[in-house]
Amino acid sequence: MPAGRILLSALVFLPLLARAACTSPTQPLNEEGYVKIGGIEQWVTIKGSSCANPVVLIVHGGPGNPMSPYAAKLYGPWEKDYTLVQWDQRGAGRTYAKSPPAEGETLTLERLASDGNEVASYVSRHLGKQKLILMGSSWGSILGVHMLKGSPSQYAAYVGTAQVVNGTGTQISSYAAVMAIARATQDQDVTAKLDALGAPPWTNPRNFGVLRRAVRKYEGQRTEPAPKEWWQPEAQYATPQAQADYEAGEDYSFVQFVGMKGDGMASKVNLPALGTSFPMPVFMVQGADDLLTLPHDTRRYFDSINAPQKEYITVPRTGHDPNQPMLDAQFKLLQERVRKLAL
Image (cartoon, rainbow, N blue to C red; front, side):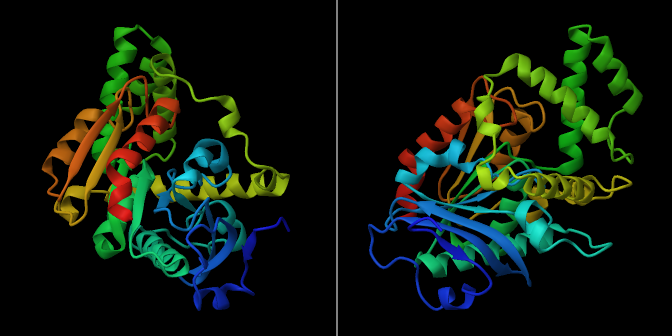
């Protein structure tokens, strides 16, 4: 085991709850392992250069696409100024591998949001922090808002990226935008495929995947690509078994999201119905060329929000998925507006 790394296994979990991980403000953190969350063991990593730094809990997208295998390449430079917490959600990544869902088990927003708030509670106790910064992207932005609504006192601020507002509404807006591009560019292939689907809502679980591929095609023509090396997993996540577990969790979570008859978690997403008042500052960072969560939808939701402080940032040459301009904008926001809220 490398020096300075603590494995949070089932054997050492209870003693860790009894004491804080940080014995001095300058102590670095490099922890990873399973923590009992929501009655099952879930994978959590905690990394940063100093216990004195604010903590950012990153809620991954997908669902089923943990960022833990790629975090060092994407967020490694942030560890100088922040303690970063990655969490493989129930049904995803290493959590799926260790605690596979029972046959017929259904994921719900309520269960996942409760898990997320339990992770936040654990991290706060373990690190001796009163409040965390919550950051969610895409699916993680849905879950993030549900977490805020369920336990607002745990969070100093929220940073939403590629913010989803309404599950069916997002698909309708995306379908219309992509179809408009396909027709304007006389792209017969995409036009024919989207015509065959018809406009959402859908009952066929494959339809969303067809739309997502078209979104990626057109965003690829308009945005700055992410470096390919970003998506090479770290060694421990790159074994054949780890890759198989990741893909199995991704498949499971996707079906839970769309549902076999259009009745999955996506159909139940309606963030305005949760209420638009937030007791913590709210920030949104939006790709200007995002064709899945369109800027006009996220901006309308943002404008309806009541919060002590709020800011909406648009990032040019950026789509739904992370790239360097998006990471730069997020980090700039953290440094200039958010960091001081969690100190």
